[in-house]
Image 1: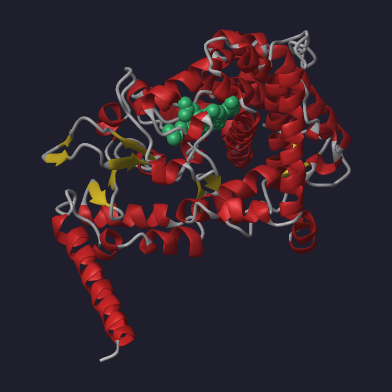
Image 2: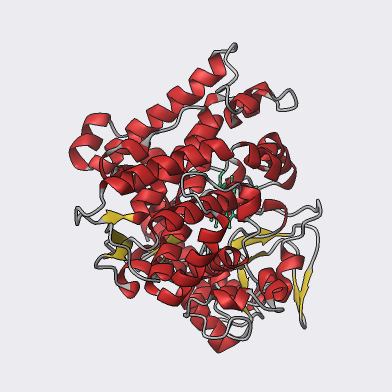
Length: 509
Ligand code: HEM
């Protein structure tokens, strides 16, 4: 027999044995082999690939079905478990400084583990987050009120211009322009001014939305982005205009961060300090953490995180309020009392005291989920205990808002938009189940900013236009309900957005 034939046969046998061992290991020998779930999911990551890449962000619904079949703890891929029981939140996402990591496989799903959001290790994460978390404290955000209000005023002016024209306004784009302008102003002291662009420039919405759509693909194929980045500009421009815009935007981030890094005399806008000037001037942050590429990643992540989530919540809540006249009427009565003169804005502190507005916001948060993707954590040093199960140290485990927010025991008739569920004595218990911002040491750092934007935008816009807005060709199943998990929520891919027309003859509430 020839040597080459022996080599081929040997290779073939080695591959068969290796595959057989892999199958046996994953199904019977792995430390999580005894956890319930579908065998195919336990066997290969291609199962998740099929749902998240081919069927576009729908593994979350398959996970929901698996829970119905197999119970509150399941194995969802060869390495990872998923839990649907809010009593487990505090154990999985501790608030005390404990060694808790992100799972490296999914932490890079937005293209890098260099930003705070994608940082794997506990200590590095603390250092990175600590360098800007002060900016997003309640006190700092309160100081930012005039900036947020000035942007909301521009949005109101734009909405007024559409009065009685019959032209529909896409509120997803409108709110995303608002949140993008606020976060870019706060980060760089240079707002992107999307609110001033025609129809709130849907391109700018897509520039933050599309990377989230690509995140599953990047998770499965982490080398995809570096390879795409190697392609020449002319090729990108000729084949995909959106990628061309990504490139242009990348240059914009580089230039903004560069300007801040290399102009030492400039400390940011006079009206407010900015995140990146502060990162630049932080003496505790080593130079390696202030490199241009890392700060550009951080900038992209902050703008993306600060734009989409709040915008989706605001547009979904606007839809549900306009769809439910009794809710609109009750809210309008409260807003008219709290803001008697529409030209004088109410302070954030006072807005936070309006009970029904708070209830509408909580219900909007519940029904819009925040991040619909599971938030995985790894406890490298300790085993976790869930009911009778012991989860071995080092196992990635995730939980998702979708399961907690739709739990009928906690939220009867979960599909119903019902702010009254936040007015009774169960409010505090329900609040514990609200998982929009995640929990623990990696809980959303922008939570106070998001809450401020949401309170101020909903109060101002509904007070001014609540009775003047009519929904325009907006269908709940097509345009509003969450259908895809692109880490952030996404309605059906056929969605035309939450659209409204504006009419000076107010409807009765
Ligand atoms: C309604 C609005 C928002 C929702 C629902 C939301 C949701 C979330 C969630 C669930 C996480 C945790 C991710 C994880 O555990 O892996 C997170 C993290 C984060 N969010 Fe938000 N977010 C919102 C608004 C914002 C805003 C306005 C900013 C602006 C800066 C922001 C910046 C961040 C950052 C930087 C992280 C990473 C935090 C860390 O890893 O320490 N988010 N967000």
